[in-house]
Length: 250
Ligand code: 13P
Image (cartoon, rainbow, N blue to C red; front, side, top):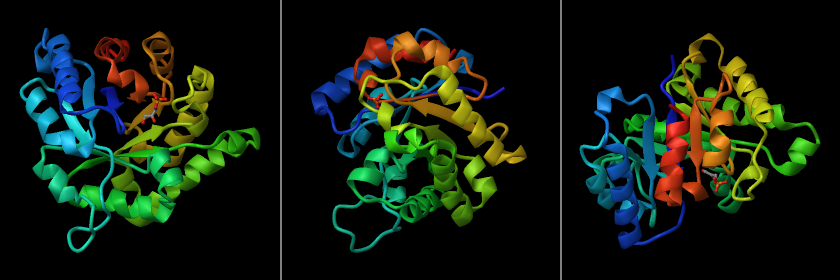
């Protein structure tokens, strides 16, 4: 049995006040049951400048914290970058790697994504490797080829075993922030392809779906056999909505 994970990617939103408030609301909702009895893991991905604040706000609640990005370098003259060790030092357990916004808007190649994945694991972080096709690629029936190639680039760099002890998030680019969600069948089809690619070693790897997940569509998506939770953007900025999504994964 794979323990589902629901992650909230806050992207570049908010300030210290809204970050503190959102974290506090989630803690209040979440603390009605002992940590050991919860069947879902909740992880928050605030902007890097709010990591330690959010970490402090969720302390003792069982809610984990992660970063949205990291440098592929360990340390050195890399102005503006943040290393894996620094994120661990801020209390992070997870880090997103290869989000489509990083790939598309900041030119991260699959090779760079693989290096970042490696750097994350070297620091002791659990990477959530994000993959997904564009609308054009889907229309050209390249979805599975694109997604498996994105994962293969990381397998080639760190090996199958290391990919399988991370988390993989399938986020179709056309479904991110658009209100358009992959149907549960469409999502399951890609998740099954990923599961097959990972083989025996990946039978217990957590595979998340992301792309306009809401409380109203989460249950059907999370009910698919190879979907083990979600990576939520917009809806994670609203405490009640996000908490209802988390509950759908139970
Ligand atoms: P939305 O849920 O806003 O579509 O964003 C998904 C996403 O990019 C999460 O990483």
